[in-house]
Amino acid sequence: MLIALALAGIVLTACSSNTDAPAQAVENYLNALVNKEADKLPTLVCGEWEEDALIELDSFQAVTARLENVACSQTGTDGDTALVLCTGNIVATYNDEDQKLDLSVRTYQVVEQGGDWLVCGTR
Image (cartoon, rainbow, N blue to C red; front, side):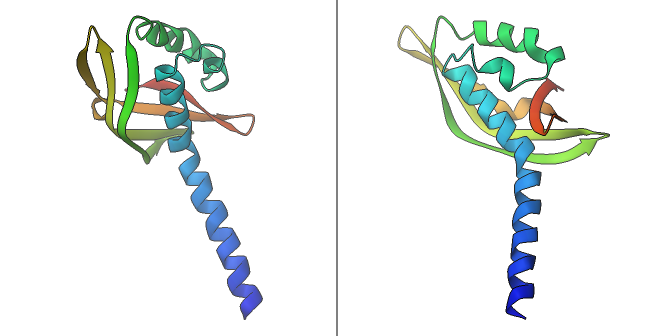
């Protein structure tokens, strides 16, 4: 009985971490954006989205940015694409003035490629 419970716990943990993987991929992407990690960004996005991701990164070059109360969760799927919605904000500061960018206004599309979950667009 104890072994069965332990195995059930392992299976549940594996399942929950797999469903959290797309949300974690988006959080990693957002962190790379605000931390201006241009070298890391291509490892977090699919090839089709890389140019868009770098353009998005460029938009943060002249500001100091941080994440505020960010939480992401998978809200569904569209074929092989996981749909992830985040709450919270990116706070961009320029000349001591904060501008909040609401993350809940778009849904991230995340795909699994080579065992990794990668951001591959928004809706």
